[in-house]
Length: 255
Length: 325
Image (cartoon, rainbow over all chains, first blue to last red; front, side, top):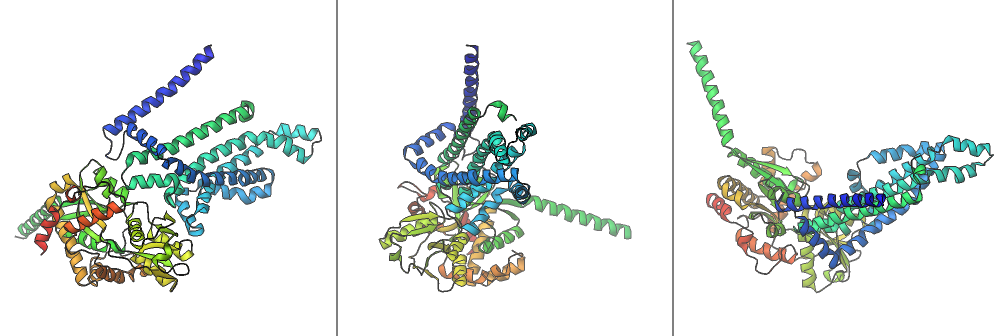
């Protein structure tokens, strides 16, 4: 009963924080902060309009394609690279600097350059997602493998476990939580990548809605598009975090 | 005597300094928001800016990344005058903004890869690439679609004439619409590979100047001086396109322009003069009417009863034209 109350209280506070935020937004829009800044009510109305006329749905259909392709590619190749780097010193020596540089590079400056090599189509956008998502996925997988508790490895060897058994039964299960967290963070970076690509390469999907509504001064629709992609990214990542908590108990996640 | 001479010289120097300071204070500053990179096509503006400065109107040009940002700067009062054609914003934003001068008219060229297409009719059911949704380039292509009674399969958006030019050269784009500089570039890079499709006369602004009504009312004198200089430069160019090159040299403008671009200055202005894109009279009412018609077709303007006076004000132009003659 006490725990139920605590959960209800927690949810209430979260709701209050949303209400305060939206009320402040409404006030700032009505004040107004700028002639181009719409109040929350107008933005919400614009969001419903775009949902009803199908333009938002069509935009997401276009935006999510390169995002999903990019994340799947990173999920396979990125995790593979990370695991390879964790298990083999030579792969680590060869690849680690590349991913460290990629992680530190200001991607908004690099993404427009992709067009010089891969044009303006889907490939460029998938690459933008990969460039942003891959480093975090690779590095998390690599660290997950490297951080395997030495006592577990010693135990495996004491029981005369083979290298194959050591990798499959000790190292990989142990690293799974960090790899999954890497995929989640990679998806977060992927959302950033696809929006930057759609704003900087060619305006399609959500990027098109943002640039078009900005150019025809329909600011409430522009803000609604921006708010919608933030909401989609936040909800998706929160759901993944819940899945992660369910799959991996705290003792594994914490290690 | 010597002492007195020194004192009087010092007094004279101080007086001159003081006078200079007073003049500097009297000089009005106009914050000018440009939504583009400063390049060859901005030369008339730069010349006018230098000349206005000599007359006590200090125009400070800031180059923003896009027209939208420049427009926002004007709406929010961080810039005084903006350059572009944000008709949609003028119609929708509740800060009264007015256009008052047409800097240049639109001049674009539909380009096709001759390996695939040769005439407008060939574009029926084909994909075309324009600058952006609701842009002038889209409106021109839509206008031709109507005139030629054809239907495009799809219209894609690739911002930047230079990017579309690269796409055409690489073969990723087969049909597009480019500005004069980039049309010349693709024609030179791949002779015979591309053709320009004929276009009816499109009369609309490419770049116009706008400001809030309040600003224009309060700063009539400074704006008139600036507009006067802009009109003068355009008239000189229309009389003799070579004049802009001489002025550039004299005033030391765009010193770091690459040689390749330097060679394009004269052809750009010669072609512009031929195409009549630099108005002698700042556009005025005819430009305003043409713009309303064109941007309605482009989808930027909504509604049927569009009134010129809701978008343009002619007082600064009239004041300037009265002095130029």
